[in-house]
Length: 334
Image (cartoon, rainbow, N blue to C red; front, top):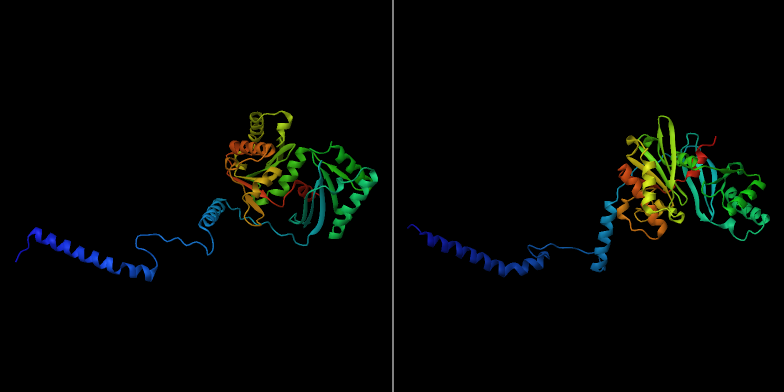
């Protein structure tokens, strides 16, 4: 017997109806057994964590994952010697104890930032000398020989009255105070922060309050220049003028040296803090547009950073948590 088209249609409908009824009957048991409804996506939150918190941590993880990585590992010094350096500033000073070997490989052993011990309660020359003696004793106790403790005054602080007073106190104790120019700071910063394997494709930036140091290595040696610092607004310099001035200096960097920028200074430190992953030594900064400035100084610093990024088209700005131009000064000593 040959079935008509309509009969075949009725048979198909009947089969589908049976399948549907079986699904309705056994679906609850399947859900109870496997715990997942067909056609839905299961999301598991960490135990005892509210959904809103889990969502926030997921977003933070995504942001961290988007941050670029810089996997370079600096070589360890072999049979190194301890040396100490103190950077004198108007409001305080930074100090570093570094292990350096004959090949100029170095490793930071101890650092103090923004210390103001030698500025407190020092009305007389005797106060200055006694305060400095106590501070120097701390470095000696760590194991730094007295002859290997050095003092450096940055280009932006040498004329500050408090720094001049401290310099006088150091000289009375037999220590020589090294005053450096902005160009020397740029050279020291480069020698400290740019690894040898990156010397041909990188440039160095040190954004300070008083000036910004720019340097790179060429066939003629290290080229070092300066531009406005992150407090340019205190000198009635507009954002537009600062941006333009920085770009003019940066334009001199050869194209071959624009692949990486090794960046240090106060503002880069603040920006790196926002994206650092654990205790990594090298942190890759986000693009300037991805930061929201807090305060006038940071806003000005980001404007400088933007000028550098726009002019060079560099995409990888690497902040070194251990570097400082004064360590480059130590590396230049015999």
